[in-house]
Image (tube, rainbow, N blue to C red; front, side, top):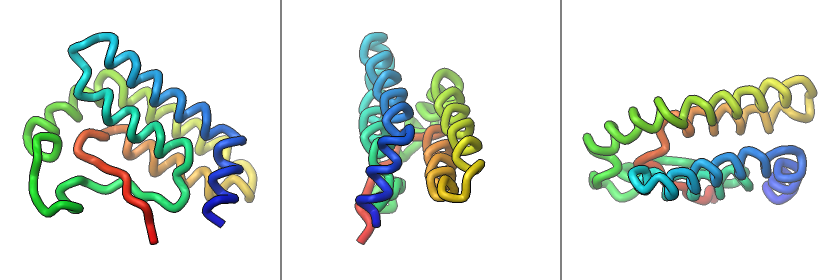
Length: 132
């Protein structure tokens, strides 16, 4: 079911939001100052292409220790991210979620867009894990 969900997701619009994440990552690299945010953009962009069967969690929940992205600097980075890019990606995901909720078949896709909208508000310090 995960594979079918991912294929339908990708073909019916997941590719566009994944590309939006990757474009944000490229813009971060071009600006040089925002290179630390680029890695999060590419990781979550790849997750956005095929989200079923995966989950985003905080890195310190996985490794049981803090790092630069899960501490105070990560929080500051997430605030800056929210102001410049996070809000726009969240709006894109919420708009796509509303479009998905119009049909009964689209409800699981709308739920995924809402999860991705929450992730887009503060992506630094998160990692993607595969569900069993």
